[in-house]
Image (tube, rainbow over all chains, first blue to last red):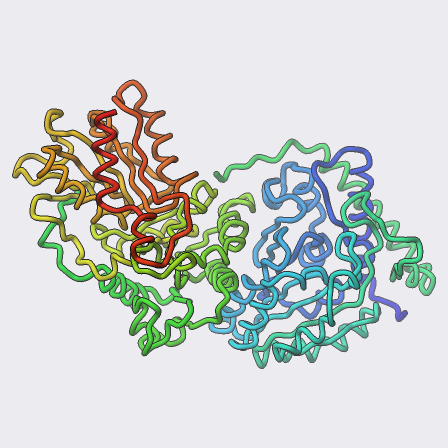
Length: 293
Length: 347
């Protein structure tokens, strides 16, 4: 793997440390409800970070911590939200899955945000040409009809809609082979929507591949499906990993650490220290207050 | 209290709504209208959107048959600073957009901690009496009651549609507007010569025209019952009131709210508390209805003053058949309302 900038690596390791901390907090019974970590998939939003602009909307999903942190680098606000403490982004109402901040929004229902993003893209096309709506979905989301209704609209109306598929081969506990006929590519092409598959983890190379394609979404106002072949290292939520030991789980982190041990170790130590400090500080805050009725 | 009546005009309800949409799009460049088959020359299955696409081509968009995507995209427009009016061709099909309505539009207003404005109107042509059969005749209001952040309105011959549309959009949260299809060809503001009406807040109050004082001043001895109905049932209620007066010498008042949920009858509680019988009539099928909700509210707020249980009239617990004679048996008729009042007063 090529060497990353310190910034990119720091963000990758911040997300990883954040997710590992969450699992640890859950194990200690310090968190309410559930959470879905993006361990193994951190490089997806980090790759896209430099390709997206502040004027773009981002729609995230249940597995969205990495998407949020790559957009705002605000582990304090996110952790406060998940822990229901003062400073929570959404006053603790939304929790892990339901975040809104500026032009970033996530929901907990699969596929639901694609039509919404299409509507946002429609307005962007008219009032802010060049801006786009980016939606993160998983492979399991392709079982939802809303995806197809939205792709049809996006292609018919030539909307600047970037659909990022984090295809990690497993939908909760159901492997892709048991839940998807055909391919994501075939489905995108059925609507005449362009599709690009990313099966590498090298961030520089991913950006090089995607930059002209994302530019085209902006310049020509058209939808694009980018499918990342990725790996979910952890469980779906907390302790619900039913995958057999042989199930493929490639970890960019291990590969990168092996290739660049010194840079990796130093930055990881910083990220862990930072997250430890934030966790302690946020846990000591008073409960969040919900003012809106 | 606003005085309505004959002077206010005689356009058909559908024309009033069509003009309201024209005016809205003209006055507010942030408004979009989305729906199936609404381009000219067709102008929508009931012609309510006629002329709009010609005048406002970029903001009046015909869509695929994708109710979920239509409501979702409209929510996106609203989220990004626009305002959206959606036409669902038949209210039955709103079920296809239920996730977007319940789980996205409704919840988004408040689930992000701070209020997220979502100015969105979903128009739903509803109701039977046209022979369209089980999938095109429902009054599905009850399925949308009690959803946080979602308001239900119903078109009525007494409420100017522009004012209602403005009010819904100003709420900054998703609203359903139910439009009983049989109202489209009725005249606005028209009542039987026996009656007169006025608006009390958002509720149209129709009463016997005695030339005497206003609706809230009716002497107790001159009030036998109060009917509460959504706009679509108003004409059937008036027909029942006429018969009850002429054949049975019973005098009643009809209340027609514009906003069905949340419903605020506070200003009318004194009058309701004096009525020997309160009857709620609606077209939705029996079981878990809007009327149940109204009755529970009135029983709570007027307990001790009510003389009888609130009487409920709804369509049968049934699908809506196509054949005219079968449809009549299932749906609420003026005779159903008349019978309910007579039985209620006897009971």
